[in-house]
Image 1 (cartoon, rainbow, N blue to C red):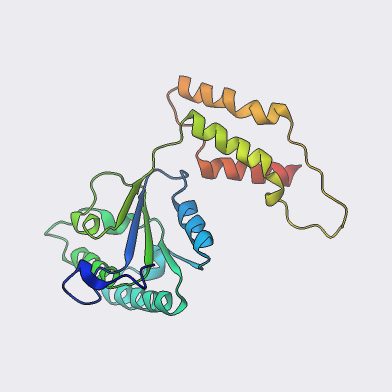
Image 2: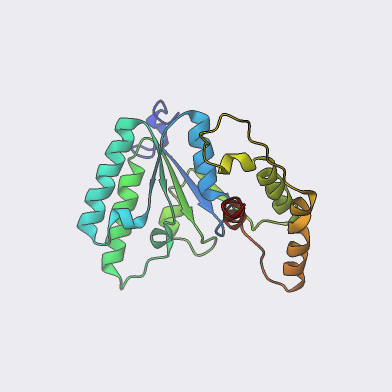
Length: 215
């Protein structure tokens, strides 16, 4: 628990005592789901934010991030800064405003005592200042055949979760046909044959939601 972690990691009191988890990988491989699962497992609220919530100019970002981090401390929740690619790109000497924005972002994150998840689609070319402040870096690979099959089967077995509660008290019976369960395999093989990616985890989820709406 970062709230009980001793500040021995840095000579400056209160600095570097939180946990910063960096999740890297292409869209739809489970980065956001990881943060959601950790929040559920630890029974803490998840506070999701995006760069749009922080703003685009230095004063607004500094103020908004400070407000969000204070809420995180007060509520004891887990923060999730999703799609934070804008903060991870290497800085150049000619972009003074962006350098100031990233420096402000790093300073506030460094003094935060809770858990912060940062997600990015970038796996290379990250700002070294960001990487050096990460406690736990995790890199997600694109879904392979085994992972895709397991994910498809999981959705087949848990399709009821996508159906809103019904007023009727009668038990709901749902049968996912063997044809539907096996459909993904041929599509996946065809995508590989054509050297193109198949659906991501998010696209698979949306396909099941859409199928339920049409059923």
